[in-house]
Length: 227
Image 1: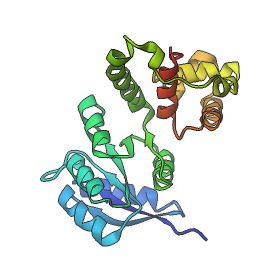
Image 2 (image 1 turned 180 degrees about the horizontal axis):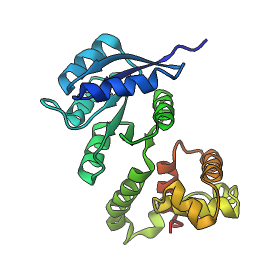
Image 3 (image 1 turned 120 degrees about the horizontal axis):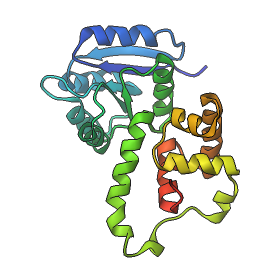
Image 4 (image 1 turned 90 degrees about the vertical axis):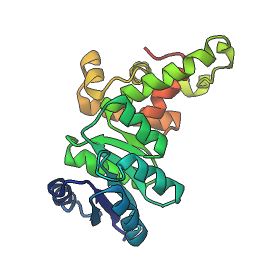
C-alpha cells in the first residue's frame, strides 16, 4: 500500500489553514502533517516534517511565499511547492515560478482540483491553474519573439511524426492551448463538453509526450501552430 502524500499548509490566516486541512482530510491518500504562518516557520517545518508537497501563500508577514520557495529550492528540499493564493497578477505568477514553484493555483480552486494538483506535484510534475496558463504562455511568447524573428528556421519545432499522431480535433485543441485558452473556452468554441475537452487534452499530452497543458501550449507556439 502506497504511503500518503504528506502536505504542509503555509498561510498567515489560521482560518484558511484550518479550512484547507478540513477539505484535504477527506482524501484518503493525502495527509496534512503541519501548518506554518509565515515563510520562516515554513522553512523550519519543512526541515522537521519533510513533506512531499507545500501549499504556499504568497503575501505573508516577514518572509513571503516567494522568498520561502526560493530558499527551499536552494536547500534542495524534496517538497514540491504549490503557490495557493488569491493573486493572479503577472508579477506574482512569474516571481513564484522563477523561484521554483511547481504549481500555481487560486484559492477559489475546487477541492477536487486542489487534491489532484497535490497528486500531480507529488509525482514530480507541474500544474498551473488554467486561468494562469494564458499569462505564462503570453510571457514566454513575448520573451521568445525577439530571438526568433531574425532566425525562424532555428526555432524548435514539433516533429512531423508527433503532429501526425494528432487527429484534426486534437490539433484544433492544441492550437487553442497554444494561445492559453481555458477548458471552458475550448468547450464553447468546439461545442464539446468540458469533460470531453479534458479527455482530449489528456490524449494530446500522451501523444506529444509532455507533462502538462503548459508544455503542450509552449510546443504549439514553438511549432508555429498556435492561434
